[in-house]
Length: 411
Image (cartoon, rainbow, N blue to C red; front, side, top):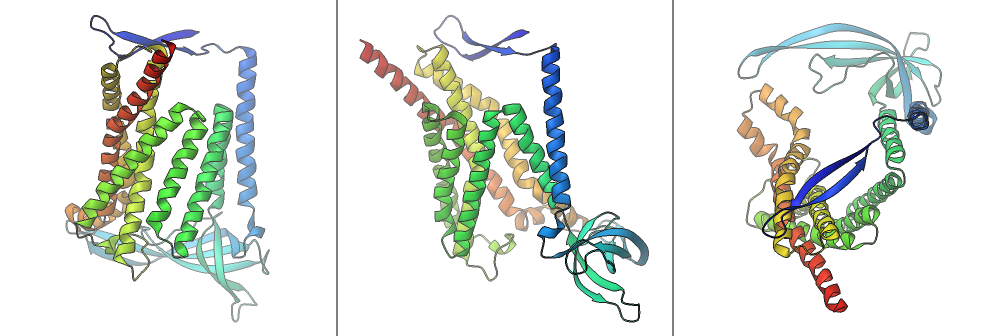
C-alpha cells in the first residue's frame, strides 16, 4: 500500500505554496514470505540475546575476584529508629541478613560459606540481597569452632550480564532493522568509545582534559556524519555547522566561567585535593561533550531540510530557504530542549528527593548540589538555539552558491 504524505516545507513565489511529496511504502498486509522473514528476525534476536545472557551470566572463571551465588537468605529485624525530615516523622528499620552462598570460582569453588549483611528499609546506602543474586565475596576464612565452615564478606552484586544482554539486544535490533546502516552505527559507536577511552587514559597521564576533548569532538562529529551520509556535501555542511556551533557555545561558557566564582566542591568525582583550573577545564569538557549530541541533531535536521528543498525545488530563493529553516527550527527546538533538560537533570532526581526527604529546601539543592547539571542544561540549550541560525546560514550559502555556480557555468 502506498500512502502519500504532503509536507509543506516552504513557500516559493507569491501566489501559492509548493510542497514536497514524500512516498512511503507501508506493507499493511504482509504476505507469507514477509511473515516468515519477520519470524526469522525475531528468532535470531531472541537466540542472540539468550546466548549472550547465558555466556556472561556464567563467566565466573574470567574474574580474579571471588564470586558466589546466594542460595538462601534469612532476614531478621535488629533495630528501628525514628527521624524527622522537617515536616513529618519517619521510621527507618534495620535488618540483618544471613546469606548462604555457593562459591563459583577460585580455590573455594563449589563450597558454601555464610556471610552477614546489614540493610535498611529505605535502601539508601545499602542493598538488600535476594536468593539467586551473584555477589562478590572477600575475606574468606574458616570459622572457629564450626567444623571448618567458611565465612566471608559480601562487597557487591555482579551485574555485567544485565549490561551485556541489553547491549546485545540493542546491537541485534540495529542489524535486523537497519541492516548495513545499523552495522555502520555500531562500528561508529565502538570507535567513539575507543577514542573516549584513549582521551581518559591521556588525561590520567597528566594531559589537559579540555585540549584532549576538542580533537575528540571533531573526531566524534566527523565519524558519525561520515557513517550517516558518507563523503557527501551534506556531511561537510553539517560538520562545519556543528563545529562552529559547538565552538561558540563553549566560548560563551568559558567567558561566563572566567568572570564568575564557581565552587567546584560539589562537583562529583573530582580528585581531592583538586586544582580549580583543572576543575574548570573538566567542566568545560563536560559542557562541550554534553551539548554535542543535541547540536548535531538540530544541525542535521536543518541541513537535510535545505538539501531536500533544493533537490525537489532547485529554483528556491534564499529568503524562502531561510523561512523554511526557521519553521523547522521552531518545530524541533522545543523537543530538543526537553531532551537536554531530562538528560542532565534525570540523574539528580533520586538525590534531590533524598535531600528534600531530609529537610533541605529545593533552592538549596539547586544552588549547591544540582548547579552543574543545570549549567550544562542551560549551556546546551544555548547551543541548540544557536545551531538553527548557524546551520541555516551555512547550508543556505553552500547550496545556493553551488546552484548559482552551476547556472553560470551552464550559461
